[in-house]
Every structure is written in C-alpha cells, then in structure tokens.
Amino acid sequence: MEYLQTQGISLPRLGLGTFRLQGDACRAAVESALGLGYRHIDTAEMYGNEDAIGAAIAASGVARKDLHVTTKVWHENLAPDAIRRAFDVSLSKLGLDQVDLYLVHWPSGGMNLPAIFDTLMELKQEGRTRAIGVANFNLALLKTVVEQIKAPIACNQIEYHVMLDQTKVARYLAAKSIPLVAYCPLAQGRAASDATLMAIGRKHGASAAQVALKWLLDQDGVAAIPKASRAQSQQANLDALHIGLDDEDMKAIAALPKDRRCVNPGFAPAWD
Ligand SMILES: NC(=O)c1ccc[n+]([C@@H]2O[C@H](COP(=O)([O-])OP(=O)(O)OC[C@H]3O[C@@H](n4cnc5c(N)ncnc54)[C@H](OP(=O)(O)O)[C@@H]3O)[C@@H](O)[C@H]2O)c1
Image 1 (cartoon, rainbow, N blue to C red):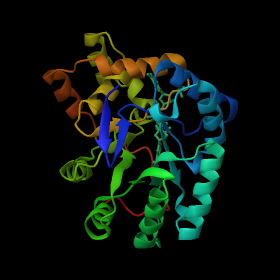
Image 2 (cartoon, helix red, strand yellow; image 1 turned 135 degrees about the vertical axis):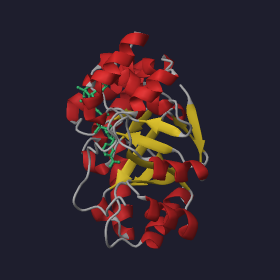
Image 3 (cartoon, protein in one colour; image 1 turned 90 degrees about the vertical axis):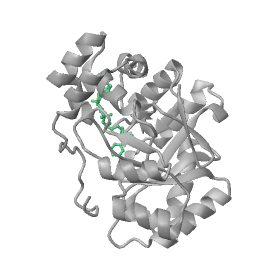
C-alpha cells in the first residue's frame, strides 16, 4: 500500500468508504476489508456506523498503529461545545482512544471558522486526534482556512472522479502540499458501467471501476476511498493499483463529461 505523508500522519492512498453501510453488514464489510489488507477506514458521525466499525476493528486483530481511521463532525454540530460532544461520542462508538483524522464534514452558512479550528486544534493537542482536516470546502473556504486561520489541515475530502472536474481545488491543494481525498471515486458506482472505461479496461484485463480508481491514484497527492461491501469488489479495488494507463487511455478519460456531480446537498455553500 502506498501512503501520503501529511501533517505527521501516513495516509494510505486507498481506503474503504462506509457511507450507507450499517450494523452487521458494515461490520462484515470492514472485517473483510481489514482481512484483505485495507488499513484506512473512512466514517462519519452522520453515517451511523461508528459502532459497527469499532466492533470490526476490535475483532480484526490489526495493530492500532497500523490502522488509519477518519471520522467527521456533522455540519449541525460545529459550535465548539457541540464539536466536543460529537467527538466524544464518535470516539466512544469507535472504541478508540484516538482517531487519526477528524474532519469538518461539510461547511455551513453561519459557521465560525476560527472557533471551529481552535476546537479541532485543542483535540489535536490533547492527543485525541492525530490530525485535523476538512471535507467539501470550496476554494474560497480553503484559502481562508489555510492562509488566514493557518490551520494545519491534513486533507480536503471532496467528490472527485473521472466524470467531475476539480482542477481549481486540486491545483490549490497541490500547491500547498495538502492531499485531496477523493470521495465517490467510482461516481457512486456509475463508473463501473461506463462504456469508455470498460473499453480501456478490456485493453488491460481490468474492469471499468479499476480504470476509474487508477486514474485517481495516478495523480500526485490524491487518495481515494471507494465504498465496496463485497470482498470481490474490495479486492478488485486494491488490485487497481497495479494497472498501467497509457496516453491514449488518459485522452479518452479526459474527453468524458466532467460535470456529473453526485452529491450536492442544499445546506452547503455553493461550489464556485
Ligand atoms: N465527505 C463527504 O461529504 C462524503 C460524501 C460522500 C461519500 N463520502 C465517502 O466516500 C465514500 C465513497 O463514496 P460513495 O460510497 O458515495 O461512492 P463510490 O465509492 O463512488 O461508489 C460506491 C458504489 O460502487 C460500487 N463498487 C465498489 N467497488 C466496485 C467495483 N470494483 N466494481 C463495481 N462496483 C463497485 C459499490 O458497490 P457495493 O456497495 O455493492 O459493493 C457501491 O455501489 C463513502 O462511502 C464515504 O465514506 C464522503
């Protein structure tokens, strides 16, 4: 597994997404992934599955130091007291003393950014999260966090895949050496049935989903967190790291539509 070094942590470039996985199904999927060699699990208080993930981690026998766990605070809990309460609950459900990365899940209109990052920094200084970061921050918000607040964010987790352009944010993150963690890396599964990607996959003895993942992981500073409940897909996603895409493949992928955003909740500030 390859890692990205960021703010004192080593982030495995391929992680397991867990949105919409809950209860026994979530526990089974996470146990399966850990058994296959995944060492990066992505969750959030909003997913309602931190307890199942905690159970899977406990049962796995994987040493804590070898595992990266990200969780996130929901946009309704961004007042300092609410962050602390949410964090305590997340940690307790996960059955951990510390998470590796704690993210603001979504920005919200009335949020007090300096107060949010003061609180996240306190959690970091207390050793309860090893690093802090953001998700779904547009360029303007990122600039505020990085250049005015000077918060040591370890990533921006955003939707990014073969069918969505993220050039502006990606360039800024790269210039600041901040990893981009790609969520919905398979466009919520749509990439798996795309004809262009299937044709590229046939050339390499790979699936369309694997092509989509390798396109992301070929980019410096990018990690990806595909959700896969079945062991076969989890293994396929790991194997995607070994495909080699050529110039012709890259051209064909560049010509795909780039405006297919899967996630756009009404409560969040606009992207541009
Ligand atoms: N920060 C945020 O606001 C945010 C928002 C959305 C998502 N996320 C995170 O990102 C993760 C990934 O996003 P996502 O779950 O929305 O979408 P995704 O990972 O792009 O797609 C998941 C879908 O792809 C299928 N799949 C996985 N591997 C496959 C393969 N090798 N071949 C064919 N199909 C495959 C899965 O099937 P099965 O489930 O049937 O295996 C599932 O239906 C989430 O789980 C979550 O952790 C974060």
